[in-house]
Length: 100
View 1 (cartoon, rainbow, N blue to C red):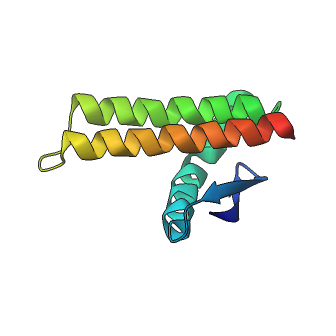
View 2: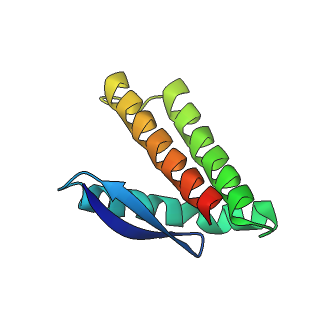
């Protein structure tokens, strides 16, 4: 396992990842950052936990839309794997937020 630091909505989190998955986690961090400003505005910037909830809702909405209207050629299995990974990242971020 490797620990890497990521930044989401202006806060830093240490995330444990399997060796070799660091690049993938950085990619996920970039996806989260694309939606972080919207989540910050929606949460009123009150606290990190509330912002992460809004960020999770934004991503869940995107995932739901993709599941209901999958692009051609994308496997439902792949979408399920993506959802599982997003849930794992969200759980890790929530755990880090609760420890902060």
